[in-house]
Image 1: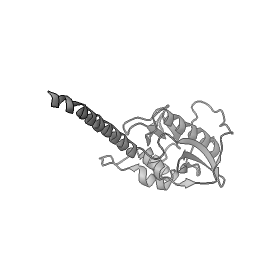
Image 2: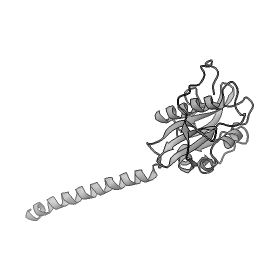
Image 3: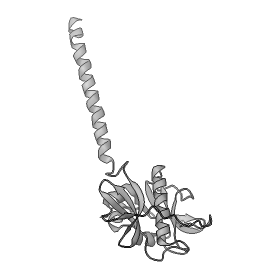
Image 4: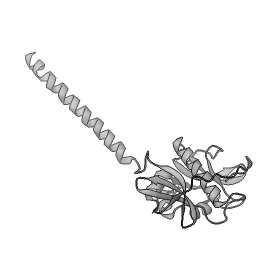
Length: 202
């Protein structure tokens, strides 16, 4: 009995130490799987060399997401108006925990790009990021628009029997961690998009 009483406190202390070590290990493991920008990204429209682009402001710097160039979008939105509005949608979906995946899809009969928590989530008005021209190939358009470095790392290749009109999925964490970082970017937050009709979406 005396020995048991003598050893009991040290056993409790040892158990407590092991518990703390286990908790610390779990915390370290969780930190290791977090993307470098986790909890610190802010999406905004920026202008560099006359080209409006959507950026993610991260600890690494301004990671480029999309450059708004070309004629892949329906009128009447200008590249700057589209940049401002879509950047807000990126930020809103990120704040709501919906921006885990960027995916192509179809909404109201139009090819679209939207945010999603998982690959199985459908595109909705709430998660819509931007609309493409009717009849356009969304996967090809997204491949041209998104930053190439980020896309090369974040594009999810699926083994599937799908051979036609297959959705494209981009892991947002991996994409932003590998996207090109640009300096000399001027934030463009003062100009508001035009008040267009409800059914006119960027």
